[in-house]
Length: 311
Image 1 (cartoon, rainbow, N blue to C red):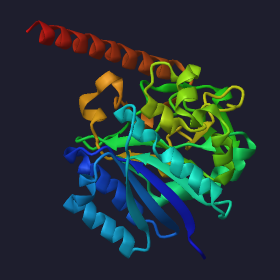
Image 2 (cartoon, rainbow, N blue to C red; image 1 turned 120 degrees about the vertical axis):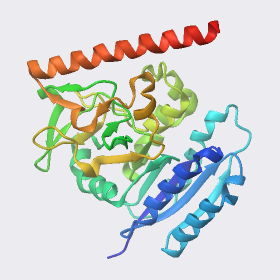
Image 3 (spheres, rainbow, N blue to C red; image 1 turned 60 degrees about the vertical axis):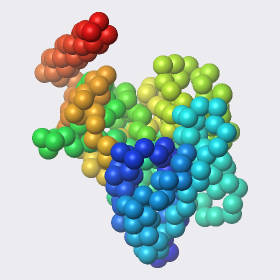
Image 4 (cartoon, rainbow, N blue to C red; image 1 turned 45 degrees about the vertical axis):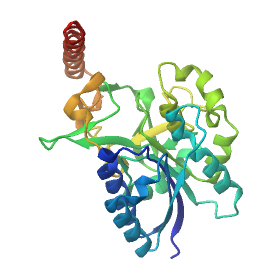
């Protein structure tokens, strides 16, 4: 069976300390066997390509039948706009002739997408599209104490019936926090995206959901908030088991692993097994306890900053 082609664009602002994160992301792609990856690493500094570990993992990618190249940005109005550079690659990919089930994957440099993630996405994509949805991915990291935490959820979500739907007999939940640092599109979804305001940096900035979010986040949203089905938080839906635990194949690793350690802005504070809770008194109490601890963290952070500036 022929491999499915996957165009991959990775946003990698060059910082030497971040090189190990990108290495892990590339190593995950190197494990793909049923998907052929054409990787473009978008960077502001070609010194990234000269890093020994990057050169090694790129060579390994090519040995395994994938391809990789570097594209240096220039003329950016702001350094954060590096995360929008891939939009040109997306348009070029869309305009090329290719099978309808080809995929375009955009990720930031610290996201490891496995082949299991792609299999899951492709399996449920037809049914999801019929429902106006997209199979979502949930970003997580493994804390030093060997617990998995969501990087995007800022508190547990008590799941209500209207937030659930079934696709091919599998239960899905509409997440209140749908963001992950990337997106996957097939050609049909790509056509929708390029026709939407979300594919243009100036139009995306004016959308109501963009308030208090940087252009880096807006770039990764893609179709998240475009034509959202009634009653759902976004077009993304996540598969869960009988206990509302997210299925492993829908989870992608955040290789930097910094949120669960710093807990900055309350990110990295919700365990994967707690992101979705059933309705009931117990869940309400657990959510209340989390909110109380979040308030304590905010107060402590404000006090630290106050005393730090005073000193």
